[in-house]
Length: 301
Image 1 (spheres, rainbow, N blue to C red):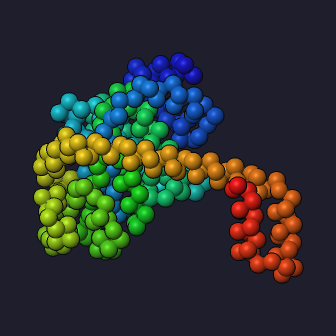
Image 2 (image 1 turned 180 degrees about the vertical axis):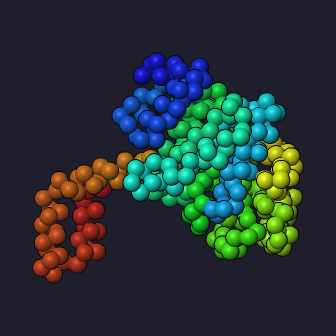
Image 3 (image 1 turned 45 degrees about the horizontal axis):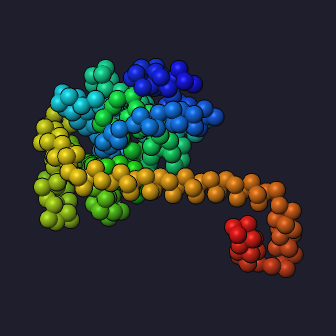
């Protein structure tokens, strides 16, 4: 394991890929890897991209990644895909859709594995691996998962919300709260009919921050330079860098709750009283709500 950690710190792509697979699969060695690299991380900047499926996120991210790379950033892209119902692995494989970007930009697909918000549970530790390997800007594409997409904003420094003028769920996405969690809003495929109308609707909803709404065409490479410049300005803003504390608070809370949940389930299944309660409910001696509340109070204390 020390050899793998050493490879990560040297930026060896094979070591990085192997470590990410171990972390993503939650293998036994995961903890050792994080222990080995954690103090070597430098708090790389993270930008999350969210929006409905078909909004052109992958193409847009590819353009932006190339732009930042040309400015001297060491860029990595994490594309969170829907999980295969058979293997549990990433289903779409965004690396295929981003093959045209530089070999120096590391691209990796992760499976959401049913996690809420279109992001992978292993995301933050994958970011740490890339950070320790020397990548100072990490772009994260979330799954096109509709209303649950707002969770990405809790895991990144900057959130970009992408809309497509020709998908019927664009207005539904606006109603779902995506206009409340973004730092920058993009109407992609701006060469298509309806782009100007959608741009005006979003601008009106955003209000005073209309300068953070952009029209782009990733396919035609239009508006990308202006969007990249706006992202650069936000990366230099202390307000956005300071979000790391709230990101860590969210992560730690979720980790603690997951541990409590796992230990609670284990304790419940080993408890003889649990089986007795089930029988009491069957006999109508106690209602399920009262049984659950009383049992929970006993194991939480």
